[in-house]
Image 1 (cartoon, rainbow, N blue to C red):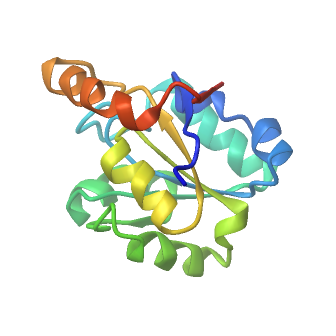
Image 2: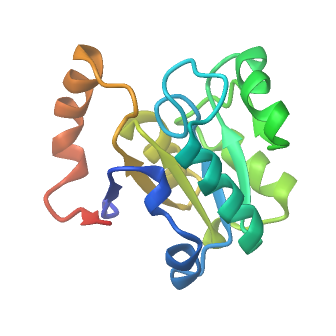
Image 3: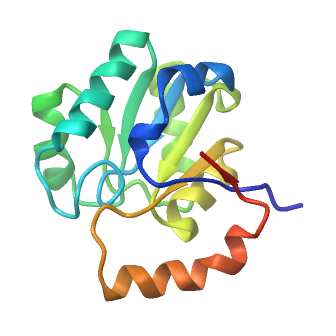
Length: 160
């Protein structure tokens, strides 16, 4: 049976309070178009504040990206965020490796990303909950991709 998709406009809506209300203490997040605009090497002010709020609340955060190591390290290094590059999403292997690194279980973790067929499927394949966010960078490619994802997201999506 397909799991209902949780959808939000922005990753910053996943507050520590909301995460704790769902018994979630670990966030695995995609990078490009989820946490930052495509190719950005620094988070915007809102995303930086969100990262800080998770750290302050004791919620573990790790970046899981299919991008090259150099690209992900350039973003995560200055922030002191652990990361896994070339994660191979939608396969579960990378997410399970990240959970092991963080000492977390799939039951207490959520995968957050802007693509259903990579990020959300990877979360489900790893036995986790998943949250689909609107991409930070809009354009023709992203509009078409989201249109193709609609039948998989379903009408019963939970919206934050």
